Length: 270
Image (cartoon, rainbow, N blue to C red; front, side):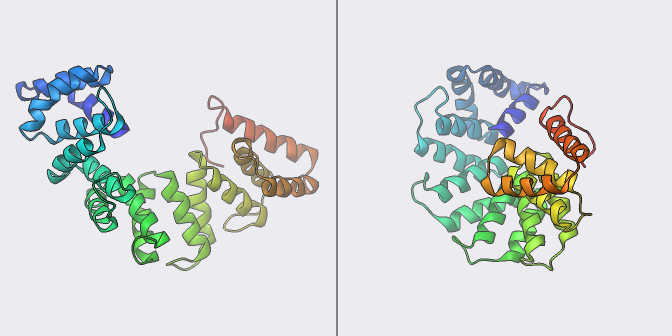
């Protein structure tokens, strides 16, 4: 959805008679006038425009201006996917994966995810990583999971960064490396990934891959627990409190508050 909005917004920056219908459709879509958008996109989609086809598919998938219709969404996503549009390939894969297509078909889901992933589509790369990591839909393959998580993580996908950290931490498909695990926990944690924040806090508490630091351990655990309370985490925090001075505790609580306040959030990743 976000990718489509970005694509449509970029269209408006381009001036070409051939893009006239697309531009009008994009303008209507972005202002929420979906019926006009559909009217503008339809003839262009019939002529083979993958962007228009994808936009129509998205409207039917989400019920924007039309009654939600997964069969129609599938039809238009498939057309756009066959034209090579990565976003449509991913969505088509998702429909096969989740059973929203005509039938649930994990082989086709993986096929379309892979096509999108090979084009650099980060969400598809992450999905492939999960599929190979879990091994429920294909034979488990940590090497392939690591490959796709790495690609998505480098593009900033927090979930992939977290999963990559776990693989380095546990030695799944790769030699254990606590330093790299902490690196990826940190990247995901700074994006707000709760489990990564817990992982980073634990790393600082134990000294795995980083210098042991009770202030930073408490900081990250407090940040994570402010969003999703965990009795186990609270117990660890209570243990840290006993080992910290009042000044250290005050520093950790301030760092936690500042991080949660986007206006005060420190630029440097601590």
